[in-house]
Length: 160
Image 1 (cartoon, one colour):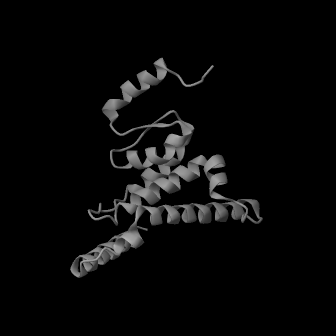
Image 2: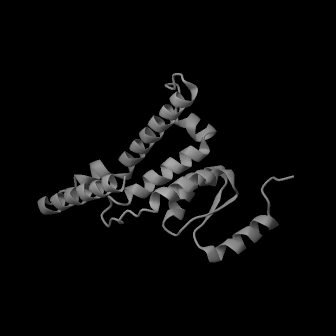
Image 3: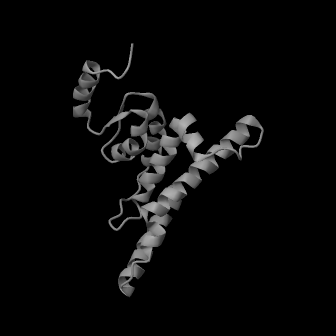
């Protein structure tokens, strides 16, 4: 997976270099965040359908993005986080992929099921982007965690 991601990053860098040499900006059409969001939905749908088909021994073609986001929030946040993190390897100032990116995104599967989720500084905004709709607060710095926990305890959200 790292080799493929590195290859993707290299292709993106080459495309941007060609654009720079030609004075064009065609990379935007291929590497735009809008395009990546479309690919993200497609990737999530493919994975969910494949998993559904394997676990249910039936057709999973009726799955839709909205259904996956609503009823499989962990899968949605995990896949979307990984995909968003991968996009950073293709930007104008790309970030080198790290071996820890995949496990960090895998851990993000838990985010929609908790009130507070701790992540590293790089992955936190990516997780937060996708977990916020489930009411999860993502904390990027360990030093900030006690204050966030204290604030949550003083102002609980709808618990009896």
